Every structure is written in C-alpha cells, then in structure tokens.
Image (cartoon, rainbow, N blue to C red):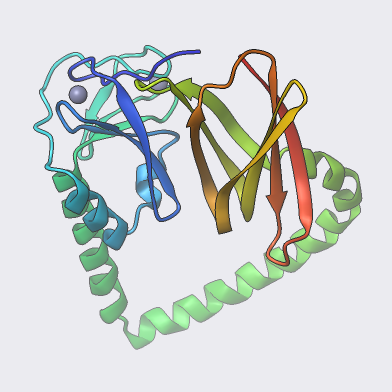
Length: 236
Ligand SMILES: [Zn+2]
Ligand SMILES: [Zn+2]
C-alpha cells in the first residue's frame, strides 16, 4: 500500500472530493493531482469551489515523476500530465482559467451558427441516425452475452491508500452513477459506512485503518435504492 506523494515537493497527498470529483491535494505546496484524466470532467463551478478551499500552487518546471506509475510527467496547458496512466498535476488557478476558456469557446462556437451549417448538420445527423440504427441491430445480438460481464466491471480503479494521519482512503469510480456504502467486517464486528448518499461516478471513503484481517464490501445502489452490485476487497 503506497502513500501518495506530491511530485512537486514530496509531501503527502490528501484525498479530497468536491461534487462528484475525487482529487488529491498537497497541503505544503498546494498542487492538485487528478487520476485518469479526471480534471477534464471538472466543471467551471467545481474548479471555482476547489480554488476557494485552497491557495493556488506555483508549479515548478522540473522533472516531475508520476506518483502513480513513476513515468516522467509531460508539460501541458494544465501543468503536467502522465502519458502512461493519464494522471494530471495542476493548480487551482490554472484549472479555473482552463475551465473559463472552454466555457467561452463553447459559447463562441454555438452562437456563430449559420443556415449552411444547419443544413450540413441535418445531413450529418441523418447519417448518424442511420449508422446508429445499424449499430443497434448488430449490438442487440451481442448484448445478452456481455450483460453479465458488464455488471461485474462496474467498479473501476478501486484503490486503497494510506493517508498521512493513520487512516485509509478507499477510492473508486463506477461506469454509471450509483449511491454507495461500504461494509467493513473485522472478526465478528461489522460496520457500515455511507460513501455517497446520492448517485455519483466517483466514490471516496476515509476511515481509521482497521486492525488486520478486515474484509470490505462495497455496495452500490441504483437510483431506486435497490442493491445493485457488491464487491469484496481484503484490507491489508
Ligand atoms: Zn507539494
Ligand atoms: Zn503515471
């Protein structure tokens, strides 16, 4: 089990969540870390909320090593990114600026909409509908076989990590939005923790490090509160 460390200053990263986004924050240099290119799913409002909770970092232009896979991070507009695992190193100010720019670009491309564009987009839509119907016909033959394997792969990237204050963070994402809870069984004792009360894609739970031989069961519930999927994880 690794402790996540900041590539900029080697301090501990603390897992944090805002909205449906889970990210890692350095309380020494204030850098932010997102796994699996999650930064691109952060909304402008969420970026502003992140900026409100901390002062921004000054990212140093040096050889930063990915805290996940030890590859050398590449520089980009966000700060740095890992080409191997998709991790992103950034700071809150930069994140807000990028989100603002993408909102502006969105408005520009959507107000400069002309009749000729409309005509070509109607043709494109018809082609898309045609292809989609074809896809559905072919896909329906395959769906039955794949349904079972899809259900078991709803929980992605589950990770259990030490935080600096003798707690463990359980972090995972799901392909669909689920509300979630965790049941930790240690010996004869059982404890249930709520992770997300409302359905979300990102799930973060921080608990005291349990004594050894604990088994954690993640329980996902759909929007009707029906138990959907469970997965067991052995805690170290
Ligand atoms: Zn740092
Ligand atoms: Zn990496």
